[in-house]
Image (cartoon, rainbow, N blue to C red; front, side, top):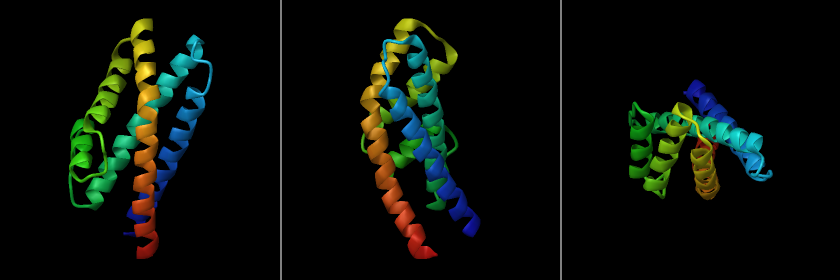
Length: 139
């Protein structure tokens, strides 16, 4: 149990750092192609950490999800995600960026990331309050 709590805390810490770095990138001049590329890379990394943390949280609740899509759908079912379609679109965008690259797609995905970010941040804070408080009370 203690190992699971430690891993969960580490997941939250990793996600907090990833979100902070993504926010930092979103605050840069998005006309610069290096900034665009870096922002998309940080987004991919953040989504990867996010779904894996959600998977770990679901498992702690006795729910097994195997794929990123399944994980997001289950997280929505238990009420952790408010906008299922936005999260599924984030996953789709993350998958697109890792398979093909062109300037137009990058700009479209960057616009999406700007729209998604508040949802990502709000969800993180809700989960952090819920799970970190629960874990503190269990120790």
